[in-house]
Amino acid sequence: MFRMTTVPLSLNYLLRGQMRKMSNSGYDVLMISADDDSVQSIKASEGCQHESISLTRNFSIVTDLIALKQFVQLCRKYKPTIIHTHTPKAGIVGMLGGWICRIPLRLHTVAGLPPVTQGIKGRIFKLIESLTFRCATHVLPNSNSLKKYALNRYPSHKRKMDMIGHGSSNGVSLKEFSSNDLEGDVMNEIKESIDYNEHYKYLLSIGRIVKSKGIEELVNAYKKLDIKGVKLVLLGKFETLRSNEIISDSIKNEILNNKNIIHIDWTDNVKYFLSLADVLIHPSHREGFPNVLLQAGAMQCPIVCSRIVGNVDLVSQKNTGLLFEKGNMDEIKESLEFAINNPEIMQSYALNLYKEIQTKFSRKKVQQEYLNYYNNLLITT
Image (cartoon, rainbow, N blue to C red; front, side, top):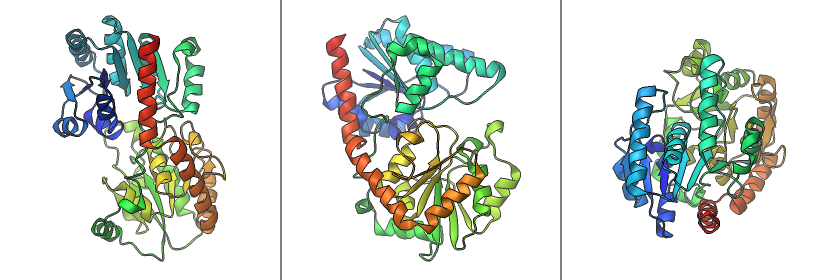
């Protein structure tokens, strides 16, 4: 079995523990991605071998053809029965290469919506996506709403479309994302980093500081809140390369200079911030099945988020959280004001979501569903 992502970070973050699970269950697993300094630690943590090929996130005909040639060579060397790809670039290289080598089972997980791009670039994106689906034997959207979107976009591939379990690429570890797994000294460091004061309310947003994550309208809505003693914590890196995603100078200046907005570049201690937050605000414009909502739900942190594909598979209005129309600053403001002024109601929503995650989205359950899916494919193929 090949498990393939574009960069090693995705193997470690999106699929953590899954390769070891399959290996312990009798599968011979080879991980494939680009190379970087994290590969050795991933091999150690998963207990599986890894092969590096020349994958890049950016489109490059020469580099991508080299990666395809390298992948075909791996297929001919190892002769896998199953190829399972994640992320767009790994998808096109893995599915096309698998089709060339006639690998019997070629699975591609769709874990997000393509960027809204017009013109030649937009047509190229759709062509690559369409070719990926055409070369796959199974196309696996990782949420119900994403499956509906994919079916509407590519109705001719209906027979290939499937979803494993209730969705999600790897679930969430209820052991890791738990108040019982927090270390006191780390918590104190986190509190010190944001100058934590128990008399304030804390709104938390997790994700890259980019336009498509809804950061601009979030900051504008926060500025208009008619409630004192509320801090906004933005956890994520500023975009510096993709011009269409870079936020405006005025919003960036507001983030950097407003004493009530706290920007943290990045940290692996997400669960500590979730434990301190009164509300997770997730105003993203496009998602697949957002891990940050799973993590917040596991930590029983109340959620306010955009009504988009992916988000709506976890959050239902006034049941497991609050929803607003994406990009609507006024609705964001109203939702945040309700959440801040009604903590008991929001906590009841958070408890409802936690129970749902326990039932459907624990990492142990999701990984077992993946294993069952592979086993059933081998029986029926």
